[in-house]
Image (cartoon, rainbow, N blue to C red; front, side):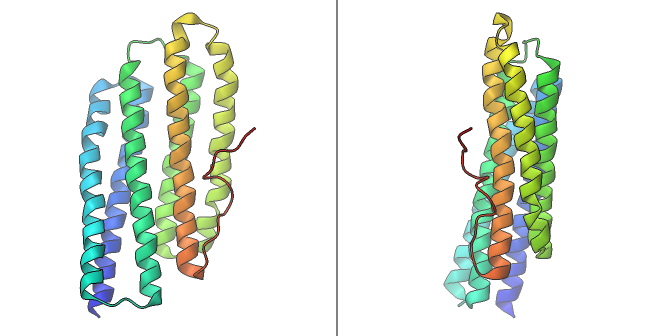
Length: 222
């Protein structure tokens, strides 16, 4: 059927966008780790490609709705893709934020332990996005639900970051760097939260009921 072929094409576009975002996460974290300005600039420029894919998916969905009459199952898929498309685009924006902040402190002498925690968080965020994309592609509910435990690992790393940051901020020469890295840590954490949100869209697609896995996508007062 024509609508099935159109849906397959749109979903392929979504997975392509997802792969670009995974590359952006990897590049942004490496640029931060290695204080690589050139790589940071590449990540920033690369966001234009992610934005083009985002707009292309929106256009494809609008064209399909104008020409076809999707049944309930197909509408759920389109709604899930619309949500995931936006989540991926915002994750790409997060990578730009990390890259820009890494450029601002490229001359600083960073705290190695804090950098290590940020790299760990970035690696986990990349892993979570990959699991989220694979779970959606394979219609794997258990894989989607596993994102909750993976998100807790990022949250634990973020708590270690905050504990260490208290000591680092006592050093005047590291205060500006530390303040920038607070934003980096929060940005990486949000990428992990969006991966959980993608998992929730997979569950919605498979069960026809939307439910939040946890409160992971909302700030929690500690």
